[in-house]
Image (cartoon, rainbow, N blue to C red; front, top):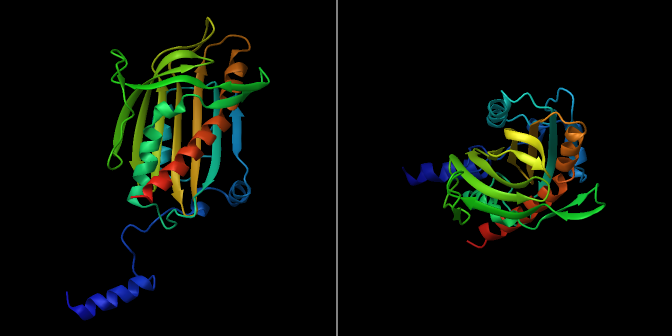
Length: 273
């Protein structure tokens, strides 16, 4: 290419008249409603718990995410659902016009760090005090063999990845979960499903594959839009549905605090490279 042509293209790119490779990012106004944006920027968290014929209310307008939700929940017929919507404000060092590949990779690896969930706390309305959410969280080689593995780390996000984990929960006991990770333009999506039945004490609460969750991190300029939905088909025991719903609701802040801390770490690491 002639030097004159290169010079003209450079000028056009600097003027914003041509796209620059790798510069993208989503627009919050295209993902959620204006009133949601103003409330979330002000620091609010949207949390909704539904019991009767639950239907998602907060799902961002993102085609890949919506398809994953439809696939994951199509045959569940849930008896309760909890949704969350939250804005994480990027630190000053972060890239604004679409995350860099280094930032995306670090965020992806932090989401894979399931062992880091051990010890996070939530406020229990029932106990009126802070309680530990998970006392154990370990990646394993499979649901049958259950041999422990270190948290996986990748040089670049994988298009699709399945990870199994053994987690001991102070409410539901020791269980096996499947985590499916997906990466898409400006999005990291995580789906979770229980591979063992969940109990509260000796009472069966949620059958195998009857708890399904999806969490998504969408890159949107100065923010990461964090969306999560959990749907549960609980066993019909009087009062159990409400107890399970409250158990999930009380934990939302703990998970969001965990994510914020991991995201802070991811952006720091990305800019140390």
